[in-house]
Image (tube, rainbow, N blue to C red; front, side):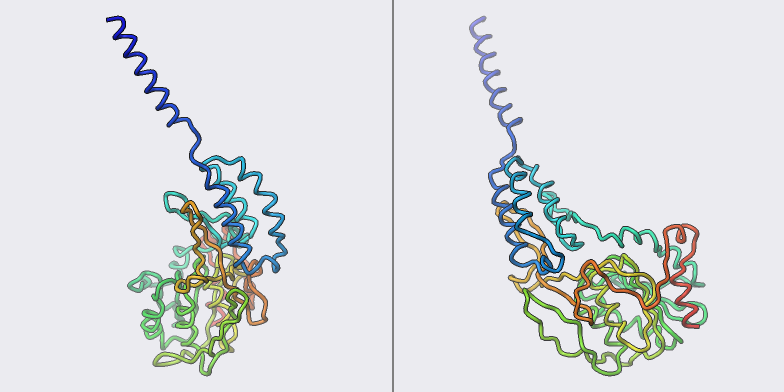
Length: 340
């Protein structure tokens, strides 16, 4: 009995030791260095703004390599996070194992203005419930005084290409129009073009886009749709206006009947292609982790990227979170008075 008992104890101890090896041993980390090398190289190869932002990417390698060498398993994530933060790019992100997107850098003007706009406060200025498109990305109605209002929350998919015509048809007979882009959303250039084309009576030169340093040949944008809205338009922007929203504001800003009001946008001009492999932003590292690094460089009409710089309004109307908390949207009020 005693021998069997001690034999059983020996077996149990052996199993416990084996299991403890599985439990306490550091996670597999032999791909961390490979991931670091691949991520650093990807940025060095495709990212368009290293020179523009005066980033010494070689020195970044020297700073972060020792940290990677010490990192075990998931300890690599904070290192990757900090390295991508060095880009000061609101588009750059990495995926966690759970699939979530982590953005190391948030534009400072977005942090300033993210609570300086509220759709609930906007709705107080209407005497009726606002309408939503089927995709729920566009909210619209007519304000008292026959002033049209359109809130664009998203430029992704092909929502605006399909839905904007119907929205504008509903607002066709208004004396003026407010286009509200005070939201942090990116998206597709085709959606921007679908909006801008409805306000131009002659071809409009498009903004410049460079892919890996080469200028993309874009034909002038042509007027589109069954009618062109020619009454005065106010475009509302703030620090949360970002990416495709900034492109839309910059293009509309060129039109004589448009006034851009609010505050300077967030400044996210990097781009990527969803269909051309070498221009895609998503990049898979050796371990399977995914990072996003933009490959395109979008310019304002003055030829300068709006990365970090943003798009300035023609009329600056500051607005704070305190204004919104008090139930007042000063930027919307200014737009309404301008159009009366």
